[in-house]
Image (cartoon, rainbow, N blue to C red; front, side, top):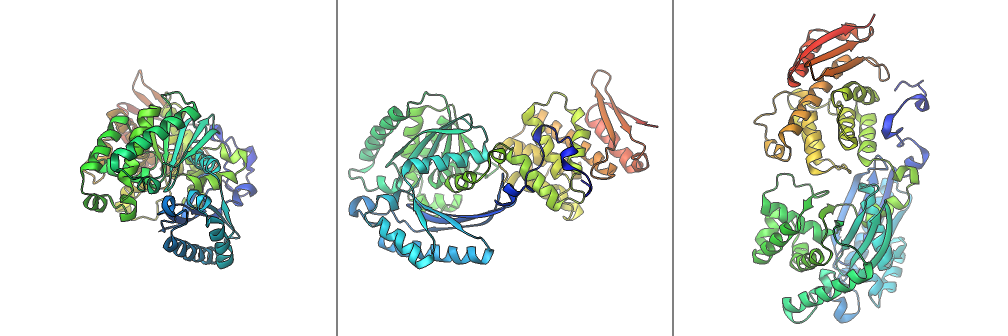
Length: 515
C-alpha cells in the first residue's frame, strides 16, 4: 500500500482490513504472563500480530509445587523455593524486555494448599509480582478462551489437565459455557493407594460424576489442553511414525488413543522419553494421564480429538482482546503481519490473491484462506539464498507458530510456497510430509505456486493490478489479460512462467493486452 492511500477506501475482501496497526491491537503487541501450575511455572511473552501472536519468550521450570499435597496439605517445600526463584528471574527478564506489567495466575496446587496464601505473599514480597489465585472454574474458562484464540467460533468440549486438577469447559458458538473441575491431575492420582486398579476405579467414578455435571451429549469435538496431553500426543506420533511433529492441531482417534495408552504401558519410559524428547518429570506422569484420557474418551465419546497448544496463558491474552480482534482469522492476521514486516512490497499479497483467485472457482472459504495466506507469504523469504528459498518457505509454513491450520493445510500451504520458488519438489527431503495430501491437493499446490511465480513477475506498485487470469475448463484455455502498465513486464521469463502455469493446468495459454 502506498503511504498516501486511504486504507478505508480499499476493498479488503472477506478477511477485512488488517488490525495489527490499530491502537487496541498495538496495546497487545508485547504481553507477558506467568502461569504457576501444580507441576510447572512458566512465563510466556507474546509479540507480533496480537490476534495470532508469536512466542517472543517462553521459559518453563518444573517445580512440582503440588507434589505430596494430598498427603501433607502443604506445597512441596523444595518446589516453593524453586518457584519463587523462577518468578524472581521472570520479573527481572520482563523488566529488561520493557514489559510494563506481568499478569500472573496460580492454579490448583496454590489454591488448595493450606500455605497457598502464604506462598502468594512470599512471591509479592520477594519479586514484586502479584499472584492471582484462581478457582477451578476460572481456570477452565481461561483455558477454553485459549482454544478460542486458535479456533474462533469453536464448539465442543475443552479438557485441560494440570498436575493436580483436570477441568472441563463447554464451547458453543465461540463462547465458554458450563465448567467443572476435578482432582484428576496425575500428581494427585499417583498418591492414591492400591496401585493401578485403584487409580482406574477412582478415575472412572470421578469421570462419571463430571459427565453428569456437564450434561454433555456424545459426539462433540474434544480439545485437549495441557502438558500431559501433549506428551501423549507426541508418543502417538512416535508410535505411528507421523512425519510432522507439530503438536498444535494434531488429531487422534479413540482407537489411536487406546493403542498409544497400551504402547505407553508396555514401553520402557526412560527410553521412550528420550526418543520423544519429553522431560523426565513430565514422562513420569504420562502413564497416569493415559488412564484419565482413556476414561475421558469412553465416557464422553467425542467425534474427534484435537491437541491445542493454546491454553490458560493464551486465554489470558484473549481476555484482553476487543471483540473485533477476537473474531478475526488468526492465520490471515498473522500472515498480514509477516508480510508488512518482511516482504519487499508489503500490500502486494492482496493484489496477488485477486490475480490467482479465478483459477480456483470452486474453492470454499477454508481453501480461500489458504490461498490468501500463501499470497501474503509469497515474498517474505526473499533474504534466503536462492538455492534454498523453496525449502525455507516450506519449512517456515509447516513448522511456524501459526494458528488456524490443520496439519494437511500446513503442508498444502508449504508446498504451494515451495512451488512459488522451484518446480523441483520430487525427491525433496520433505517428501514424507507430502503423504498428508492427496493427489488433487498436490496438484492444487503446484498450480497455486506457479500462479504466484507468474504474478511475482508482474509487480507494479502494491495497489496496482497487473491484469487478470481466466481459466476455461471446457476448452482448456488459460487467458492472461495484461494491463497497459504491466505489458513491459511480460518478458521472456514471465512468458515461460505463464506457459508452465498453463501446462500445470493441462491447457494452453493465450495472452491479451488491454489498450
